[in-house]
Length: 423
Image 1 (cartoon, rainbow, N blue to C red):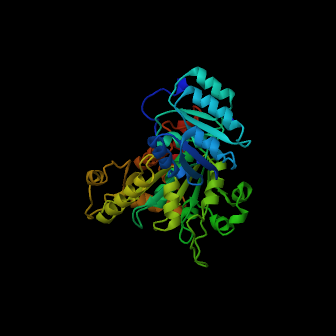
Image 2 (cartoon, helix red, strand yellow):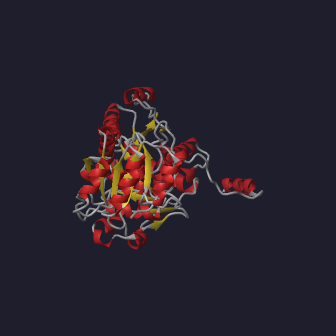
Image 3 (tube, rainbow, N blue to C red):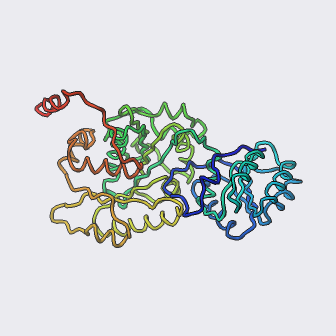
């Protein structure tokens, strides 16, 4: 009837809910039906159904527990996943035996119970239960249980999407996104792709000194062709670990999209790339909102003025409310310290948003201007500059990786670096 997942009662003790910062891969398009006995569990399942990771799943909730499930499936096909809440040991085992007689092959069952016992756990394994979760459950418990059914436990988690967006036009969010992606690829040695979503005016190709003949437009305008092989042909390789899905940056057509226009592209990238950095343009549409809410982590880039403060707070509050089971968005201040320009201090930003900026990037027009005009990253212009270190710190916060993985050098490395510096 079903296949079992890895959690035992000993590994699931009573206590606080697990961290919401754990990476949970989204579930595919599946049907999920829950049969609850308590309103608390029903509320948790309902909240889970509103989570972005179950956005493609079709969820239906009924009361009545095991008995209602058995009765429902006597005359109806079973869904991909059944969630059952039950309170007694005998009720669980007897009910599962009866359910097996009406359950379609391939259906997976998640049981929510209140008995934390190894013997019961073994009986559930023998009957092929997919997961057993100790009540009371939270929304993230349900999300994790359902999503884990469709991801191999031994497989390395892939496809972490990081969305970078500006609080206002001209604040340098694209520059920050490209340099952070560079740090993720170079210093953290994590295979990454930058997707430039500003199809009309994107600058990723210029910043990485790339001029690919194809890019993201070919995918978004040909959704039926999108698969791993097709996306791979569109990628432009920047470094060993960094690829680019470039924007055409031409005005020969109008780039109006539906809310789900980029879904197939993102889903395909998730299957092959450990890290996807979305360079989201400063606009508010159905697809930009959807891309931000569906991302695993979000970085808002703001300049230190009043309009940026207002916009940052609006974006921050909306995304935080829309993603209750995720880490709150992060934000950084950019272009700080422009001469003679009145600025709002970082402390005032933190007070208004109720969160500290993860970085305060100084105004360095000479260095940033040279990098932009030469198609280089800040790390290539000045490897030891404080801004280079800031981009690395942002990369570490967004990916959850605290240690860098720089290539080891030989004993001649210091001498070689000195000789390069003299050229």
